[in-house]
Length: 610
Image (cartoon, rainbow, N blue to C red; front, side, top):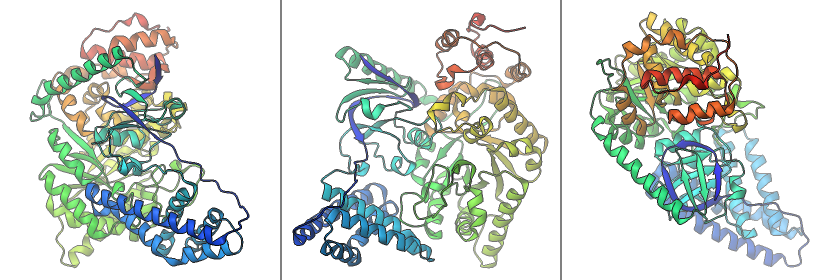
């Protein structure tokens, strides 16, 4: 049996052939030519092939995803029709260059020219030229470029990584799952996989080398296992597991329309995370109490230019109308880090996750920020809108962002444009500095939303996208639990409600802890809502609260052997992912939590020091 182990980040089991997503080598060398006309003919043929391919991609994207997503391919077709690039290549061929080298030289010249212009629109055309030239070059070299939009059969994608813009193009009808070399549970591709309900396993080192194209594999998004060339016995075993998962989901159906309350009737909100308007239906289908996180950056991705105010207004309006009176928390543009926009010329940074991103970009570019705020405020009359700002590190940043929103609101009212009378304004607590002074933020905000994905990353100084330090993604570490409780207590002391929109909010192990701490809103992938509601119905906040004092103190504990930790993991039948290598304190936290749930855990695997 050939088995690979990774991190299961999106539940489900799928059996299918692979689609190996590997970038081809497009390196070219300068060569002497004898027949310039033949080189020009090859260029014409390559351009015609690229044009036909782009027209097909544009048509497919337009039909499946809409005009906004297809716009980038319209821009590429316009570049192909521009004679300037072709004329420059002809001149270089006439000077004795082979067509491949002439294309690279000419396109590089135009890219540099456009990037050096002061006009933002012209700067953005550089990315189009780069992409179109790459497509033509691939035709000249007779190599295939990966095209997710063109997949028309059931496959499991195998790639080094999937960018957010790639992932949003996945057609669930054909892409049944994906495996990547790198990544962690909170990488954006993993989060999107859960939103799209596509099973996924990441952090499988060497997957693209070990797995061949069109090879049958079994992908288990629950355990993180990838089985290559499965036997008939294995196929039968996993087909049975698939059926069991379906039956488990069917048993949870009754909870879709039930209230989100514990066994004593204590109510919380179980909300969904979305990335685009089309995701709303999944939240409603799963009985979500609201939307706890609308990641608006995905409206800006996979396109050739910024979305206009009108485009954004229509998107926000559609979401709010569908949600009706249910709350919709919209996060303003959170770009930077691993989320890039080709048309936003961000400077190269050695550490982009700690650099120029999110609210820092928006406050530095008021024109960009105001367009989004205007669109949001115009849409506010169609539902229950709440606005929150990401990556806030200081009180001054929050005050400036809040004032910007209030100024834009005043402008709209002066223009005679209707705006909701009252809109709650909050912020994400994802930077440790903000967590420490949560009490100060709670005095000036209507709500706080804990973004645990980044909060854990920044607290441990460990890149959450890096599988080498994945063991440091420890949601139950006392440092994180103390921060979370500090935030909740500080907010409640100032009559401010608290939500959580990081992955921890949907983790079945974390649910009892967060309930006991008094978290008001849990926002998660839509597909997790029903199972978490069923879990909540079996818990008692009142009983759980008694365990919090023993959960938070940092005790002096010896390090457990991996054998003991694995014993605890296996007995728990809960997915702890990559956290199996951490300290006994972590295991003790998990044990105490398990004891709250069913009291069946064996404490003999813990060696507690005096």
